[in-house]
Length: 383
Image (tube, rainbow, N blue to C red; front, side):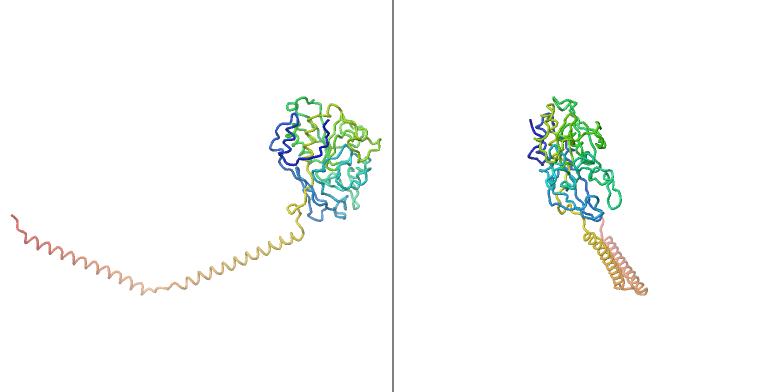
C-alpha cells in the first residue's frame, strides 16, 4: 500500500510532471495547468499590509501578527504566515498539519494561520471549529459575516470524478470530494482536470451542520487534510471511526490511529495523483519579500510629495525655457540691420546701370565682328 502522506515534496513543475506521469493513467499535463494563481488577503483595514497566497509557492518566511484592534476582525492578535510547502500535509485528523501553534490537541480554537487561511469547520461543536463556522461573529458590538471575511472566499465542496477514458482500471464510481475556500477550489479543480484527468465539476456551498446531511462530506469521510486543516479530500465510502464526535477525537491522531482505507482505493493511482498534485500546487501564503510588502504610509507620502515637486519643477523649467526662447527671438530680430527705401533704390539703379553697361559692351563687340567680316569679303577673289 502506498501511503497518502509523502514525506518529500517536489516543488518544481518538471519534477511534478514526472510524478504525475509515473502514476498509471496520468498523461502529460497541459501548459495551462502550471499557470500561477494568486489572491491577496489583509488582516486589517487600517493599513495597506497584505499578504499574497499563491499556487505552487514555496511559502515560508517570517511570521506576522494580526494587529490587536477592533478593525482587524475577530482574530486580532494571532500569528499568520511562515508555513512552507514541506509542511503542508496533515493526517486524517481535523486540526492536523500545523507547523506551529497546535498546542491544544483537543481544539483548533485560538490557533494561528500558518498558511494565511482559516481551517474549514465541521460545525459549532466539533473540535473548536465553531469560531470559523458561525454565519456571524460578534465583534466590537456588531455582527461580522465570516463568509465575507474568510481568506479565499466561502468554504465550498466539489466532486472529483475520473475521466475513465484516460484511466485504465479505475472505476467510474471512484469519486472523491475536495473541501476548501472558493479560490483554492476553483484553481485546484482546473489543475486536477489537466494533471489527473478529473472531470470538470461545479463547486457547491459547504454546509455540514446537519449530521444527517448525506449530500455533504463528514469528518469521518476525510482521507487527507492539508494546509493546517484548511483544505481536505474526502470519500463517501470511507468511515474513519476515530474521527467521529462520539469517539472523543483529538487533532494529534496519526495515520496509524485512523481506520484503514477501503481496499478499492487503498492503492488507487487516481487518488495518489490527486494527493500529490494538491500538495504541490495548493495556494499558500508567500514568503514576505520586498516585492510583496505593502506600500507604507511613508512611501505613500513620498510618492505624493515627489509627484508634486516633480510637477512644480517641470512647470518652472518649462517657464524658464519659454522665456529664454522669447528673449532669443527678440535679440535676433534686433540684430538684423534695417535697410531704408533710399538705399534700396540706389542699389536697384546700380544693378540696372551695370546690366546696361554689359549690354552696350556686347553690342560694340558684335559691330566690330560684323565690320571685320565685311572687309574679308571685299578682299576675296572669285575664280
